[in-house]
Amino acid sequence: MAKNPYDILGINKDASEADIKAAYRKLAKKHHPDLNPGNKNADAKFKELNAANDLLSDAKKRAAFDRGEIDMEGEPRYQEQPQHTYRDYANGPQGNRYHSNGGDFDLSDLEGLFGGLGGMGRGRGGFTPPPADAHYAIQAGFLEAALGAKKRITMPDGKTLDITLPEGIEEGQQLRLKGKGMKPSGDAYVEVHINPHPLFTRKGKDISIEVPIALQESVLGVKIKVPTIHGPVDMAIPKGASSGLTLRLKGKGIKGGDQYVTLKLVMPKDIDAELEEAIGKWSASHPYNPRKHMETAT
Amino acid sequence: MKTLEEVVEILDARIDRAMLEAYIERQWVRPHRKRKAWYFEEIDIARLQLICHLTQEIEVNDEGMDVVLSLLDQLYGLRTHMKHLTHAIAQQPLEVQREVRSILNQLMKTREVS
Image 1 (spheres, rainbow over the protein chains, first blue to last red):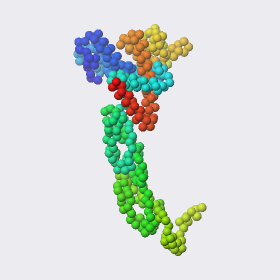
Image 2: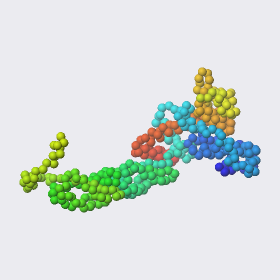
Image 3: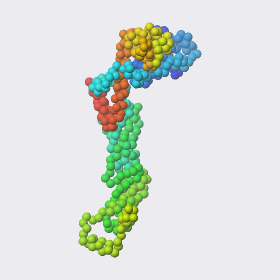
Image 4: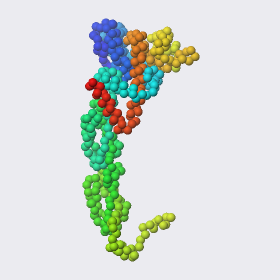
């Protein structure tokens, strides 16, 4: 605080004692922290004023300062004063003892309060400024979240905000946009919610999908096309694949994750005579029991 | 809790017993009363320091002090209500918070224009 006490009080070097007192009184009224509970700067400003006043209202110290013997740091008196001002208590729970409308909470009062504050919006009242940060929520498509995308949201005041969703963003994750809050000093926080996809589900970086296969595809073993978030890929169905078999497509998930493909055997809609006959003939000579393990377990 | 004598001592010559009793009489400070003696909490002492500053350095007179303290008590009361309200709003779902914010913004705008 190597400031000049004359500048702080806004007076000339040849100011009289009365000038100093008047200048101090005028500024102290304006910056007293207890009279400005919502203004964080008032505290520092008030301390500075007191230090300047203490120095200049003491003729000896003032002379020493004018001769350059001491600076404002050489004045410890204000530091000795108690740390707690009235507003520390009045803003705390004890404050209720003096608050004049500590009764029930009435919302209709509040409407008047906000209306009234709006009216003094341009003044310099001690009204707590609205929060600098802004909070928004957006819905992202499943693929947008998986692969990354650019989104634009419209804020309540009609302005738009461009957001880049990073690849692989998770459900409920928050993005911080520095300096895009209600005020330049604040940030915007955007919470991302991901819409479900009709085919894919995800767990972290891995994608899962259920793929139906036909009876003959399982019996014969073929190559089929499987959708992935990066586009369709070829996948070999092993001969004799059962329903529920899960195969892995390496690197086809999010950011190096994998895609897990669970097969689902789907029978033809109509079992015609030809199929029935063929299977009937086949089963007579190839009996097998897939539930054998259940018998032994019970 | 401090007694009246202790408080006079803490305030170190800025106030005497008679002044303190006068402040209690005017209800500027409201200490606890027990067995005919006054007991002061920390907030009462901080309030007295503020009163001393306002009456002595800034030279607010007694009538002025009645007004200043009454306004100050209303201000801090409202701040507490505001704090409770913002706390309650912060616990609402994001959509509700957004809605409240947009209504408030709207209110502020209308007032500034009219």
